Length: 253
Image 1: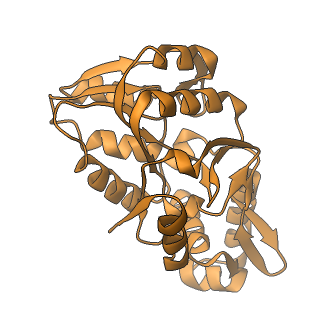
Image 2: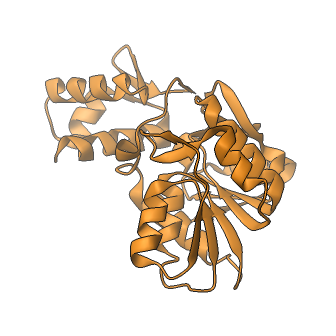
């Protein structure tokens, strides 16, 4: 198992359990204590977990977001399931917005055969995919470039969105909880805020590993969303609370 695969497995175990011992990781992955500690060190540098005595726990606060490259290796099966479910909910002839992110990229892959859509995005990876392999009309927001996440952010990107009328916005997040979605990057807030105002409905696409994490800036309150599409690992308790107090939620299988 190569390092990236081990890192993904460690994060998947943490997403499901919150805390795990080093001995359990050694047994689960079949590698040495030294290898596990080295993997933990790499993940802790990226603020993806926190070391505790004898083990690790999920990071509850994001100081920085992982790069697009790192995120593209994590929870790929869950993102694919979310993308498929989201694609099935897009009406013919819609104008949709795909927020920057690897989960929205998974949704974009499901839309390559559709020629009836107009797709607006601030994500360069999504734009490139749709230009090379898609059949729909594509509009990129432009704006200040965020290299690590391969997207445009800030007021200039938001300015483009203010002049559009969008049917459905699929919005991503690096962390979320019962209150809303969060980001450690203040420049992402105006983009998410603006698109949520110009769209008829807003759907959060976010895997369950990011639930119960926060960052410094709240980008949108949970009340701004029409619905949430996440994966099957979201707990029944969280599901019940969100559906009772906020909006409908779907757990993709």
